[in-house]
Image (cartoon, rainbow, N blue to C red):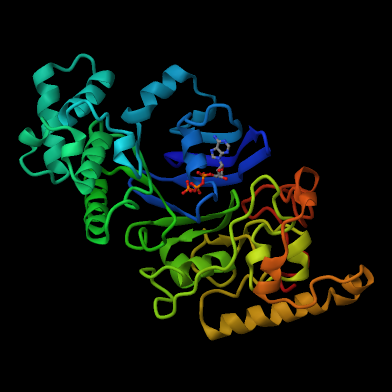
Amino acid sequence: MSLLEVTDLRVSFSTPDGVVRAVRGVSFAVDRGRTLGIVGESGSGKSVSTQTLMGLTPGAKVSGQALFEGADLLTAGERRMRQIRGAEIAMIFQDPLSSLHPLYKVGRQIEEMIRAHEPDTGRDAVRKRAVEMLGTVGIPQPAQRAEEYPHQFSGGMRQRAMIAMALALNPKLIIADEPTTALDATVQAQILDLMRRLQREFDTALIMITHDLGVIADMADDVLVMYGGKAAEKARRRPLYYRPHHPYTKGLLQSTPSAAAGADRLRPIPGQPPSLINIPTGCVFHPRCEYVMDRCVTDEPVLDPVTGDDDPTHVSACWLPLEALGLGEDAERLRQRAVEEGRVRARPAAAANGGAPESSGAVDAIAEPPGPDADAGTDADTAGRDGPPGEDGGGTRGDGGTA
Ligand SMILES: Nc1ncnc2c1ncn2[C@@H]1O[C@H](COP(=O)(O)OP(=O)(O)OP(=O)(O)O)[C@@H](O)[C@H]1O
């Protein structure tokens, strides 16, 4: 059993504007010593997924299961969660200033953290460990710097201090939420190096949340691509970067300067992420997808294993042929053929309906606003599937995936 196994996690918030369905049935697992990258644009549900595991989304409606060493985090009491937070699962955030108290010396904050979980450890031993941790994360003259306040640290140093705090209790899992986004490129690379080194040294499992595929290109073992509160694609790192299936993954790669593929011609994904109150029907990505076919507008694809990849974990939620992998010409031909068929086939019915997506480029698709009828009753979670709901490859593709 994996260290953490999350199954069918759903999280929603009631707001004056309606119900925000931030996470809509996401499953993932992390093993000891491994790194899971969770990637997606802003608002795709990455942070809410992990914050919910830590009991940090008060007021949210939550369902699913999140087994950490076999016990469900989602039903654990506040007392147990307090033990888990920091000691067993630690978090590192984008902005260390939101986690470091401005009025306490950095060393003392690490000491407090240790003391809260190990009240029997002596004062001197705790202090020594805090200073050691600052040294381990590359803070020069750690004994001296431990006596300074967070504002006396540079951004990179503060992030190092956060990492020291996260590692102080030798947690089994670290969740790092955009830990390097606020840093300049050189410092970002140093911090990522540090995290990689420490993870190996401490054999910690790591969940790395980022909007930038470049950030996890060198460190993720597995990658979960999220879009609109759901998993679009999951795979080991190499297949995901070199043989992506989902057009959203492909789009992320082509818009990421430092990612492995598509570095020669950067192409941002047109359009905006969807509203999580009025969610588009069918595939949630269809309004922005350059390959949108008629069924994408009505039927929601579930995660299916792709074809012809040696990664058995590689799954994608897209109606394009499951063998259309990667950015090469052959795959592109397969996709184009499927799109041609997928659009042509529906034309007579569409015409009878008073007109439907005749022209089919991404621009047309983007211009189509998610209709209000896309909400609750027709939630893609439940509507129009060929197979049973649930995300892990449970569904069947009615037509062999060529529509
Ligand atoms: N407490 C809340 N109440 C209402 N909506 C919320 C709340 N917290 C998050 N959301 C919404 O849930 C959706 C998912 O947010 P989340 O922070 O998980 O996205 P993300 O992928 O991590 O992006 P970002 O990097 O911008 O944080 C967003 O639409 C966000 O506005």
